[in-house]
Length: 284
Image 1 (cartoon, rainbow, N blue to C red):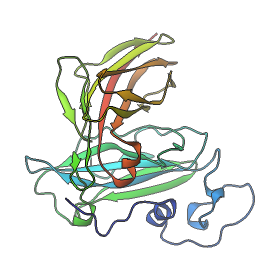
Image 2: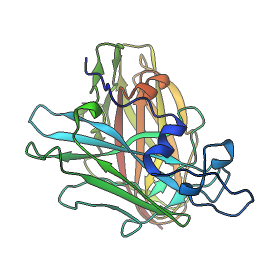
Image 3: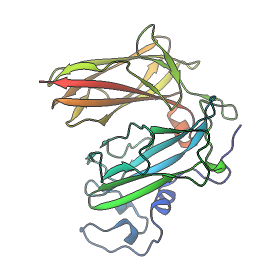
């Protein structure tokens, strides 16, 4: 079992210590206050007007010698979804590596605190411990960055944790298609066609030793709004499949992210879930 001996579970206070080098007493009032000028209190999480915090969850080795970094985020707003286009306000410091960086950030999930490993970056075997891949986000007037790094304390169990007994669900996007287990994830082999205002059913097939697993659906990227008939639910693994009804209000290229984990509480221990990415082309 790999133990992240120097990286405790991220509480809200830990998150702010990561992104803020200095914390001084907060000002009162309704105006926007830079995070570096705030101390931790319930007022930091608000309905609107706060930034999205980029986070680095850790990394895991792959059988071919490469390593994969996990990036996540924490939306400081209870109600406001934030859209940040790729570019100067949403970018990685090293463009040598492909990554499906999100551009849509859902509000604070009340049950699991932040969105874990929303996307990954795989680096070659010779990527050094002194090298960094930094993710920068600018939202609601504040710019925040987090470095991804291959340090031993940040190693993640993937796709299973022998010590805790967690195992990432096995996911397919077609009945006889490829199956994937783990955070690197699985992608639809071809974009799915959809029409503005018409319901699109998305289906995934899930296998796991447990009788049921948790499944959550999110708007990962794309120009408009996406409505789901249910954002998260428990799936009976005996049935073997799960569906969601998605509706898009604007044309364009979208990505819908599905995440599944045996027990939602396991998110807090950084193990073990599977990502699935549905690429969708929406026309009028």
